[in-house]
Amino acid sequence: MKTSVIIHGTHNEFTLEQMKACIDLAEKYGGSFRHVVTGLQITGIEKDDKPALIAELPDGVRPVVHRGVNSLIACVGKDGCKNGQMETMELADHIERSHYGRSMAHKCKIGISGCGRNCPDSMIKDIAFVGTTNGFLLVVGGQSFHTPAKGQILAKNLTIEQAKKASDVIIEWYASEAKPKERLGGLLKRVGNPLENITL
Ligand code: SF4
Image (cartoon, rainbow, N blue to C red; front, top):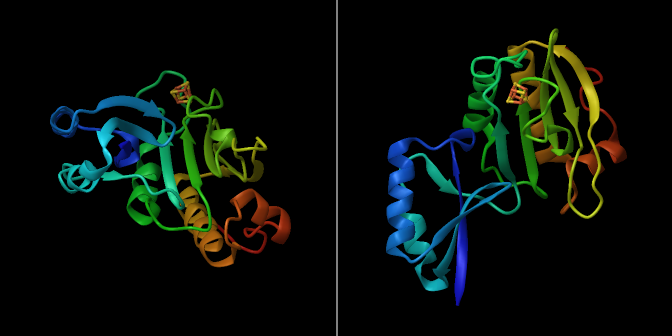
């Protein structure tokens, strides 16, 4: 039976060495590549080969979890795009190191955009940071899924340090308060804004 494995590089980037190693693995196990929202899918491999392929992934590349912090997409931000209003990589590195891959009640997708053009589709992520001239907007509770919805703005004008702290608070809150299979947007509707009494 054929199956696939979706792989994630640090905040969705792959070095040339990692990419070459992944191409070698796809070739070895007879797969091909597709781009999907959570990462890069090596598809068309034999189900029995999947554990071996995962075990041979290069350092810094890992399989995507189904239920958890399973998507972290940051655009290049101010450092790499003329439209960018905020740098994105420092915040993305923080979230990657602190939270990427953690098990959660449901999927938790995170988008970081350097400006309101929102190339990473951040407004429909569970957690989004969107660069403005005054700092990051924090937008929580978006989703595509069966009932697409944009997120709610919970904070404005955040510095990078404040955005890091906000990401920690929101993700810890989701980890501790969500009911099984509850998305972050559902938790927000049920319980209310977790940042209400917090100074970022
Ligand atoms: S979201 Fe803005 S900063 Fe990021 S790549 Fe798109 S246009 Fe550039």
